[in-house]
Amino acid sequence: LSKSPITKTARIQSNPLNMYLTKVKGMDESVNNFCSIGIIEILSSKWGQLQESAQFNYMFEVEWLIDKYPPCFRHLPMLLVHQDKRETTAQLEAETAPYGNIDLAKARLNDAFGTHHTKMMLLRYEDTLRVVIHTANLIEQDWREKTQGVWLSPLFPLFKEDEEPRDKSPTKFQTDLILYLRSYKSKAVDHWCELLKKYDMSEAKVFIIGSTPGRHTGADLHKFGHMKLRKILSSNHATCENVQANWPVIGQFSSIGSLGAKSEAWLQGEFLQSLGTTPKRFTAFTKPPLKLVFPCVEDVRNSLEGYKAGGSLPYSDSTHQKQLYLTKFLHRWKSDKKGRTRASPHIKSYFRVSPDMKQIHYAVLTSANLSKAAWGGLEKQSSQLCIRSYELGVLFLPKIFGQQDTFVVSDGLVVDGDGEKDPISFPVPFDLPLTRYGDEDQPWRWDVCYKSIPDSHGDVWIPS
Ligand SMILES: O=C(O)c1c[nH]c2c(Br)cccc2c1=O
Image (cartoon, rainbow, N blue to C red; front, side, top):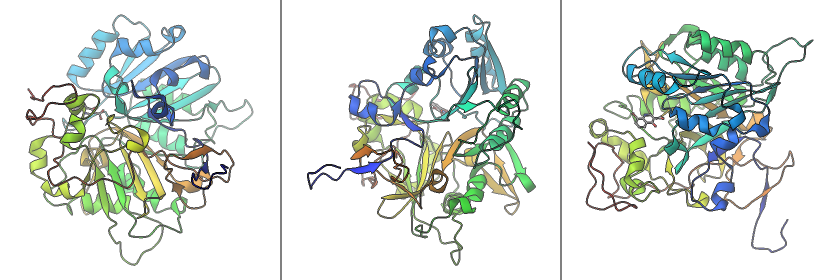
């Protein structure tokens, strides 16, 4: 370790979590070297000879996507899984018509409030398969100047001929991913379920947190949404001696739904109950502090994209006016330590941290914004969970990664120690401690005019 007494460099394992942030165009290398990755690298031929792939997402630019694959892979079979809405289907049918190798699969929705948010790539190589769960739409602007999150699975090997295929993951990753995929009830998606079964996923160390539209009850009550998270956080996988009731829950997202007239209705009710669950039996369930991270108008105005970044932050004023209580929970998007303050957030991440913000009990990377449609709303005396959208995320628990109790928060001064015993730091996308909204700060709303102060491009924002 360095000799000089002042610079404390902690030996921290580099990236055993396989958790990345997306590269930001135009940012200096230090930003783009810290746990960063781009779509070209994800799809690179360095991982092996691709055979076929599936892209689950919400927004697609087909020509742009094809161009991100290595030329030698662009003719291979590709499945695009998208939401079953007229305009999306029409657009995709038109854009994929010229390509004979691209098939489409619809994710049926039960109602107009549901969305297919899930962002996942399934990449099958000659004798390995990779799962990528992330937060970016398959459009150029989502991968250029925003902060997005990407979890890369290991390259799962095929089971050997004489091996009995079974879920060897310590987190039941394979079982839960297939259960989620079966909910599409789609032949094309079922093809991938059959493929996934052939791979040894013992190295998958994250838990699947998926949401699928429906009213989940009985044995399914804890299979999806915030109730799945509650179930895992109450299991011994989540045992953590250090965690206390006063450890805050942090939610960070790029959109907010209608959460009810009072915070106790859902936000500080069932949602915080789930995210604040621990295996410890505290006397009564004491609500932990809740801190929310969502860009204020100034954060958007000063971003690399300027007000246009707000086009991907679809929080509506009419919704906000019904839940002004939210403002007291809100914190700004600030990421100076990672040089990402101006890279507007489209990532969604949730944490439980120590009051001094140096230890992390758990981390979630997901497509799910702060909404009941995504996480689910309990009904019928909490006997059923109503979910409207498809969402997919992964939960990181320190124990599964061989940590004693928690992940640590690296303040950037890290040396790539790869010793098994070195603590693991989680690449938290924003600065800790958090920065509260100032008295004059307002949450960004995409249907409000901002014309008194021009943005970083000299533009104003006049929503149509
Ligand atoms: O989670 C996502 O990917 C998104 C969901 N809904 C959106 C709307 Br509505 C308008 C603009 C951008 C998005 C978006 O990015």
